[in-house]
Length: 64
Image (tube, one colour):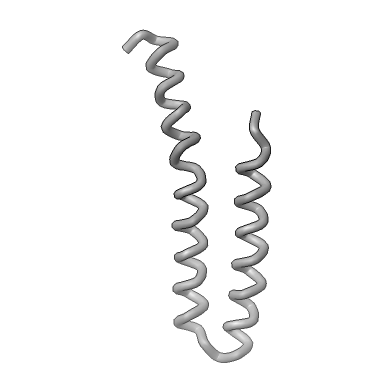
């Protein structure tokens, strides 16, 4: 299993959480929420190719 994607998502999560805390301390709650949403979107964009490969593998295994 390729661990690079897991480490990238963990790194993005750490970065987003630190920036989120900084923004909340500065009183910018709305920007903190937007930053969290951007973090989720980036993580999904990293995972989509892996999910696509999973579906292709399942199709080839079951010959669908």
